[in-house]
Amino acid sequence: MNATAISAWEKYVGQRFGELKIQFPDGIVADDPRLTAVKLACESWYGLKVLDLGCGRGRYEKYFQLWGAEYIGMDLSAEFIRSGEMKSPRILGSALYLPFPDNAFDVVTIIETLQHSPSPQLALQNAMRIIRPGGTLVVIERNPLALSSDWPLLPAMFVKFIDEYRGRWMYPKNCIARERWITPGRLNSIISSEMDAGKIQYIDSSEQRESRLHRLFARVKPFYCFIAKKK
Image 1 (cartoon, rainbow, N blue to C red):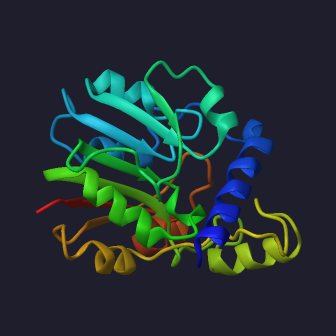
Image 2 (cartoon, rainbow, N blue to C red; image 1 turned 180 degrees about the horizontal axis):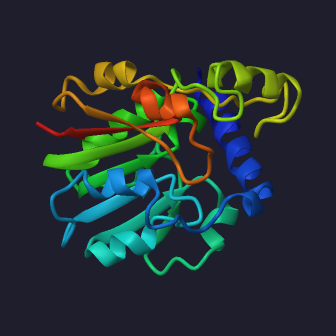
């Protein structure tokens, strides 16, 4: 994908999130499995400098503050950056063009963001560049192997495809952007030159109904958390 196409994709995504911002909460409940997985990524967050790539309306911010981290949020959507009650610094910008020096952060979190990027590989490469040696990358993404919580015997990817066709997904049919779910194996292949192999945990969320199959088989849960340390 060339630079013009990437720019058009990201401009559309930023605008689309702004149009739908009321559908995206500015908070997350304290017992959400995604938040728990993030918290356990580091033994202690106190004093760590954290960049939250794709921070949205800042739903994780208050928890990083409670844990004692130095938090900075960054997002593509101007509406998201202006909205919410975030108290920490936040920057309008793209994961593909990070305005930070090498080794600037102890932790970079990328939470449900890569799926909206025109180049997840470049986003991860940029994230690795700004993580200090020994620092941590935390990624939470949709699980491509998940079974739907609404239709438990159907793959979530198939339900997504049908909803996209029916115009019921975030991005309208035939628009310039697409939501693409990346596998943990793909993440490992991208980071392998600079980071240790990622630890993977399959998780639920407080926003989706947990099915019996999700309880029995972790690999079909809707999300996964991927945690890796920089060499």
